[in-house]
Image (cartoon, rainbow, N blue to C red):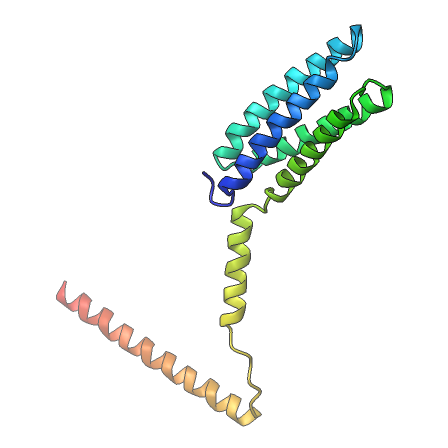
Length: 172
């Protein structure tokens, strides 16, 4: 299971997906002829997409939750279309299906997080910013003496490095 996906939200999505499809099936089969055929094709496509989304969400891929969001949005629009078309005879089933689909849509939206790489980079930038000490303003003569001390330290390091190199060359 992915680190940013909880088991409960995945389980709730599974149950709500089942309820949404059962309600949609019961509403679809009250339609007739061409609308019935189109709705069955749409239902099969949504089921295949949601099956793929289940595997992707379980594997921790963020795109799985995005596919869930799209599937639930299409189901909501289809329910609104069927209500407007006048084919939602049983309003209790329609409201229960719409409520389950809306809750599942909200769960899918809440599980779409930022890319983990972006989160890690933001965390590193925050740590770097907090680790930097604020600049202390010093008098100009103090700045000059600090610069001289740094130059002397660098010169001493260069001299020692040159002596080491000369010693190595003599040994060879």
